[in-house]
Image (cartoon, rainbow, N blue to C red; front, side, top):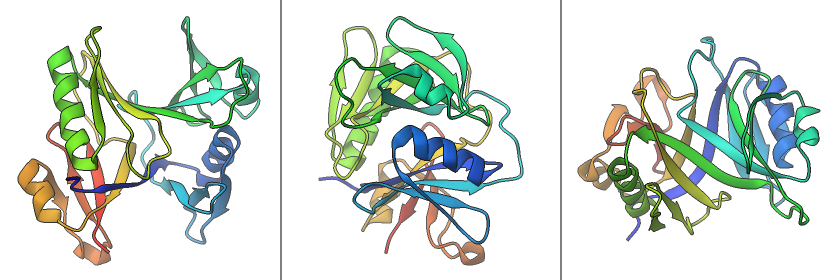
Amino acid sequence: MALATYKDLCIDVNDARLEGTFWAGTLGWQLEMHDDGDAHLRDSDGRIQLWLNQVPEPKTVKNRIHIDVNATSLEEVLDLGATVVQEQARWTTLADPEGHEVCVFVREAPVTSRTYELIWNCAEGARASHDNAAWWGEVLGAVVVDDDRGFSWIEQIPACPWESFDWAGVAEPKTVKNRVHIDVATDDLDALVARGATVLRPKGDDGLRWTVLADPWGNEFCAFTD
């Protein structure tokens, strides 16, 4: 039984209008600005899928979670303000206007959904990749897949626009707060903590409407209980 349900994705940004315009065009969602300078994007069904939260600190290191998207051409994303970081055989890594990494997969067939995957960096090795996927698979009620090439992912994530969450091993440790994180909804916060999540900031702290948690590897996420 799932302990939580996927809710949405959040990105820390310095300029929500700049970043919101880029991601609205890239993902095909509708940008809505807030009076406080933050913003969110709604999908075609009216559901809020992405929050853009303004923070004062700039991006300093490679994001440990990044978005993969489908596109009909690389140029359509470059025209929105992205720059090329690295070209691969199957995809191209770009940086958005503030330097957040995004991988673009150009499809020959008509693109019916621009959302593809969320890529999570984790400690080197297949064991770590599997453990991350297994933990989040249990939390979100998703299917865990272990690949013979040494990485793992979860798919069939209820209420989630992304086809999968994929864990890729990297050598560098996590050193700063993730600028990209997911939100979940849960009826049992205690069960999440018992399963290995750590409370970083409780609901109600200075008026906070959610609980800030970290998974067993230190990746921040927010849990909404009502």
